[in-house]
Length: 326
Image (cartoon, rainbow, N blue to C red; front, side):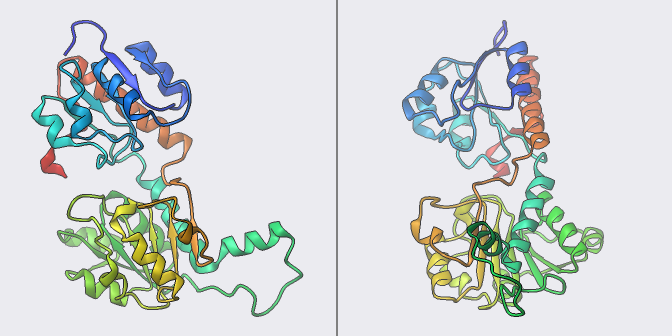
C-alpha cells in the first residue's frame, strides 16, 4: 500500500462521473480513446501503477501479471466477471483482485427477458420488415411466434441474475425451473416459484426456453456442449446473457442452421466474429448490452472506487476475489 495517493491506470473510457471521481481521489491515468489497449500498452500500464482498473476486454493472464513487476498491488476490475484475470497467479504474486458484483443483476435480467420475448415473438424480423419497407399489410399467418405465458423456462444458474430473471418470467406467466450446483433453500424456491432439477440433462430436455445465467469458470466451459444442446426440444430456444464460453457456439450454430433448435438470443459470444451465426434468421444478436444502463455502469464505477479507497486506507477491499470463490 503506497504512503501517498496511489497511482491508478484505467484501461478503457468509463462514465464521466466515475472518471472525475477517480481523478479527484487518486493519481489517475485515463484512457483517452474508447478502444482496448494492446498487449504492450496493457503491460506498460501494469508496470507503472499501483492499481490497474481493467475491463472484460483486457486479458490479464499469468504472462501479463509476470511483466507487472513489484509495483502493482491491486487489480480493481470494472465488472463482476473475472474470467479474464488469472486470480490465482495474482494472489501468488501478492496482488489483490476485486470486482463489482451485484450491480447489474436487474439490468442483465431485463435483457435476458427481452431476448426471450424477442426470440419467441420474432421481434427483430418484424423490425427489419418495417425498416426495409417490405411490410405490405397485416396477414393472419405472418410472423407467427410463440406465446410466452405457460412456457417452461429452465434457468442455468439461479444466482442474483438468475433469480431476477425468475421473478420477471413469473410475471409473464412462465413456469420457472432451475439447475444449480447446490439447491436453494426451500423458502427461496417458494418465493420464486422455482422447481429444482438435480440433473441438468433432464431439465434441458424438458424446457421450452433455456436461460444461461451462470458465470464462466473451468467447470462451466461448454456446459451447454453439443451433446447437451441435442437434448433440447426442436421447438425450444436458448438465451445467453452470461458468458459466451458456457455454450459451444460452433455446435449451437450448426443446430440452428439445421433447425434442430428453434432459435437463440445471444448477448455474449465465444466468437462474436462468427459470420455463420450472423447469417441466421432464427437468432437475435446483441453487442453485450446486458449491463449497459447509465445507472448500472456508474454503480460499477462506484464499487471500483470503494475497493481502491478501502485498500488505500489499509483494509481489505470489500469485493476482493480469491481463487476459492471461482
